Image (cartoon, rainbow over all chains, first blue to last red; front, side, top):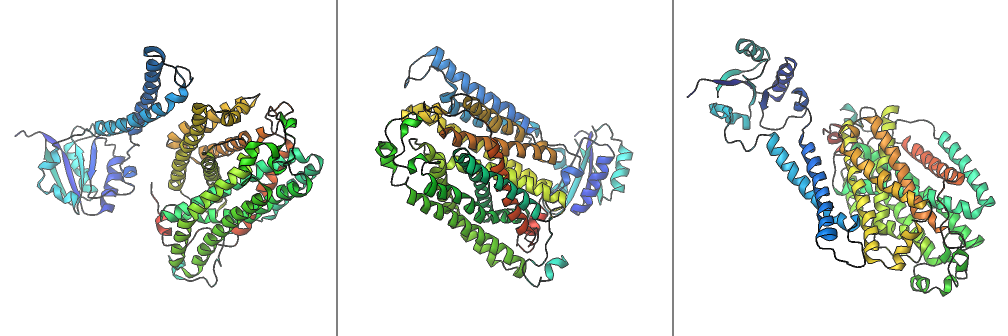
Length: 177
Length: 417
């Protein structure tokens, strides 16, 4: 068992308390920290200073790729690999390639969204240091936790401890890696 | 909260007037007078402008009727704040019914083939590049059970009575709820919406087919009603955002119409941008694929002269640009950007109506007259929209700006994206 410290965990018992604490931690300039709450709290993203998710970028790239692949695939097959006249139509036209490209856009957008979500959330994640804290299950019931990681550039054992005490936490614990 | 517990003495006792409606009435009346002079000077030219303006405005109103019904049928919470504004917009239906009368009366008294050639069985098709008369045209004969003057009048009565009946039911129930706060009104609206959606779908399809599609009565398209619906929804959503933003700035909806409401409207606009493209493309694609002269001629006409560029403009300006615009999250929450795209969509949707309506006017060789925006298009639009704005303001001044005792009003006021 290593004694390396993962971070500091602070406990709160109301949504309002953790919301205020999150605002203070955000204003103190911390970047690598998170809150654990039993339910989504409206406005928490603002209180934590979170930016919008970057998942849509994956969706856009994957969707555009799907459309391009659809068009190129049909152009390759119908115009070059196996040219065949069907219904007096040209070998390639974006008209009949469109429905397939459209479907591929949707398919790859969905894949891109799921993959992007997994990548950005570092999923699958089978272990997390907070799980070593015995009472963490309260975070799925009626308690609220705030965790600041030691890898945060602003982290300082005494200062961070002081900050968490100031924002009104009921309990502060060191988490092992 | 004290406002909720004190009962107003009569329904809609309190209201937030948004100015005098006389200004809109004056502008509308002057524009209508000028258009009226135009009817005397050049009835053929002005009749097409009038059909364009009247059907475009009606499409916006139908879109709003559908939005109210969708709100009720899904028991939606977030859109309750917006719904009252839509209900006031529905006050325009009786006026729209009146605006269609000149076309019917002129076709009846003055000249049957003024707009719809099929109204005159003796119309000489040689004058527009065909041969024989309408009455000898086999495609007309086969469609004559639907395309004849008495049926046209009956359809006019059915569609407008349906829309006026539906809209007055929603308005009455919602305004009564301000007074007694009874949830029974919400149930009335939900039941009306359940019956009203198929009714409005059928009547809007009938209207689109006899007013617009039958201008080229040879044509076949099973997508036409849906095309009309998709365009109507796009224009209605754009108009709704503009009206709500105006009311939020002016004061009636200040602090009530929130960023989160606008974001949701923006998301629906993105959905209907794709839906419009899907419908318009499918219509073109099926006709392109089948390659039957009875169907392809409609698009061939629209590839003649500068109509070709109107078509390209629709693809890029009415689909691709709004599509990529609405993908941006910030574009849907910044009022300035939403105002820009809403005006953009209202204009490109109008262009889509030009594209669908005006090529019916042909020269002696059967080619459509070039695309152009005439003075009479502008006066007819300003006149009809002016009168509609007057009806809206008059209705708005009578009641509260939001349905204050709707069961879901708090949910809507606290709506969070």
